[in-house]
Image 1 (cartoon, rainbow, N blue to C red):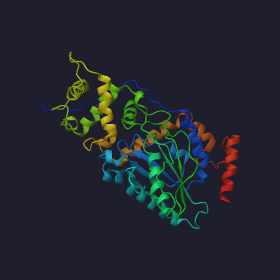
Image 2: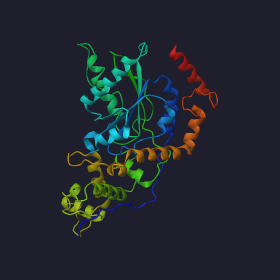
Image 3: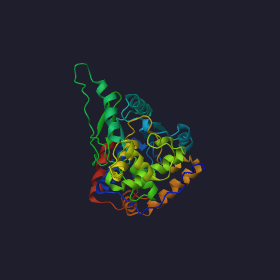
Image 4: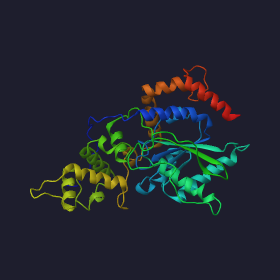
Length: 367
């Protein structure tokens, strides 16, 4: 009998919120800086392109020109043609945040934007890098800075590569929006590095599992066995022949315990009684794919991307997500601060003393 992969994953009672205080603080900071920003770079993980889309950004940075950057392209099998269908005329790039070549492509787009601005911005082209936690924003800032500004320094000036933004393997390393960072001196291009911002809640357990697989939430947030099982589920949807784990098992399976047993056996981790550390093997299996240190471990963790849904279905999903988030307290607070249009220009909004202070700063900024 031929193998049939599961089409439905159990709906476990997982936590659907990982929204923290510094996420709310970052959203408020975005709204303060928005009038100064000429262009937004939104980073999404190319292994979970839909799950790592945060619809709150459309509220706090309303009407800002945006370029979507799909990071970790070296770990993904997402098809560029599919993204072209999904994005239409919207600008997007597949990138590796550590790649100098990709950094040059981004800087070229920023230079083109600068050239269209007349008169040239007296305080430089100001951009902001945003995205969900741990999608590669700070790594990208460091690479852009190295390729752009550092390479433009005169001879004799130290060009030693230094990190201007802290990076790490877990979410939450960047917890506050940076002061402006210069990416290029000629033309003058600057950027704000920002903390990753989670949604107030995600729509379902599968979305949370997708986000956990790409590292948007801490390792300890989801039960390792459930996460390992979801990884097996999405890999079987992509390759039902079991090729994704044939190194450990010579046939496809829907049983995560069978797979974990064989991983332990292959790694020589079985105890004399045949037992093994289930949690350890589950974490090893997930980390193998999350870090993808070997070229064999590339994949997608969004079911919609695996199924290559139509553009109309994607738009429906995004609209449903916007409607869902619109009902949250976080959105209501943003609405009070920024008004219905999200620009902060409406007189019909609740302004704090801090809001008035930044309104004045932004007026002076434009003089």
